[in-house]
Amino acid sequence: MLEAARKADPRSLMALLLTNLRNLTTLYAHLPETDIFFAEVLRKAVESRQDQHLNNCPPLHRLREAHLASAWNYRKDFRANDHYKLELNHLWPVFQLPNIQRLSVSDFESLGASDRFEDRLRTSSITDLTLVHRDSLLSVPDTMALLALSKRLTRLSFYLNDCYLSPNSQQISNADLWNCVRQCEGCIEHLDIYRDCTGFAPPTHRANNSHFGSLKGFRRLESLCIQPEVLLGGCCGDDLAPYSLRDTLPPNIKTLTFYGDEGLSLNKNLAPQLKDVIMSTDFPRLGYVALEVTSEYIRHYIDPADPPHDAVEQACRERGIKYETKQASSCTKGGIESRYYRYVVQRRLQMLNKLEEVRYALTEYLYRLGKSTFKDEASTGDRPKLSFEDLDTYELPWDKLTSAVLYPKAESESEWHSDVSSSEYEDWNTDDNASQVIDLEERRTEGSTRDVGETDRDSDVSSSEYEDWNTDDNASQDIDLEEDVLRAQ
Image 1 (tube, one colour):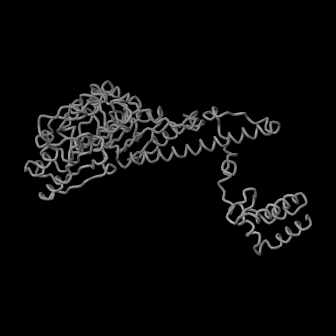
Image 2 (cartoon, rainbow, N blue to C red):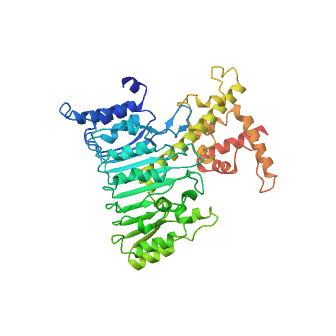
Image 3 (cartoon, helix red, strand yellow):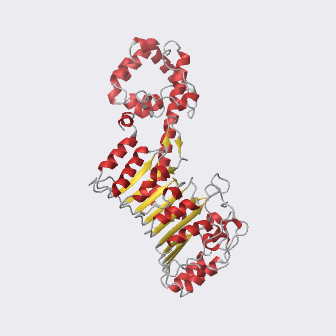
């Protein structure tokens, strides 16, 4: 740990902080690709759960909420590696912290969970679990193990990025996910699942995704946020389910949110099925229905269905049920659009912009350095000769990279003129600069013979600068300049 601290490695410092923050209840962390220090803190926290008599104040003993995401690995080449995953072999203890209740893990690779948690007597205290799999796979055995570990789970959210053309084309299917989720039918109160296909429209998921079974057995399920095709089939050409929406919804449902994908865009029977649910007395507690807009999706399909929004809104109005048409940005979508994850994405975009600025600044610096070396080889012989291929490994000379060096054109003429002192104006009146004044006056005379709208491109001084010279503060300097010009003529 001391060696890591000497190398300015933040992992050791974070581990030290987490060990000593005994009253910490909520943790938001962006974890590097391999964090053995954080993993050791988690392991010690779980071990102390078994031997509390040996440790009166174990680390993370009061932690109740944790939100973990991968931090981009910024290397010396200033490029961000955003494709690595948080691996289970480092994070597995977080699922078994003594008082953890709410856990959200993004970019999580759960491979090995079935072996890690197999035949363990101890269970997890987690009641709210969110798993975001943007660049990682979710397998059936690992999902089974994670959900079996959490016996008191009441809120469950899954985000799956399932693109048939991507390397993660073997993402868990809807049918397999259903077999995993049904383990929790006696305790789940909120279920939020979204199967995404980033970068492709219309979505192209893996083949044979199938659909869920009936949710009638989920008697405690009150809030459901899902794509209609996950319940009713029809995902990427799959067969439709042999039952209707009314036959699959949980009996005590209070809020129903359908995300806008294939189901809302292609299922021509969805509108009458939704109306049937709303008008039915089978769901007496239903008080809120929301449909995501589909305008941006429908244009990608050859024979789309009529949007069900108007018909559903009318039915809700008749039954006194609140209805809402939601934009994509206001949908949680399995946790991918949660407030914290949106914050993570926003921060990463800002960091990317900063990186681009640094790379541009460094490129300009190397260009100017190479140009200077080419002009005056003798005076710059001690400088390193760098090519643009060296950009990824070159260490920035931060003390030299001032704004004046990197962006000399960024300063406006007015700012430049306001920074010039009177002593600098007086220096212009010396004999060494007499030739410059003569050239300046000649250019000024030549410019007066041109057309009114024509710009004197050869002149280094603008008309606004001449006007500034004629102010009261610079009157004496203006007289001196005129006298020098007369003498020269």
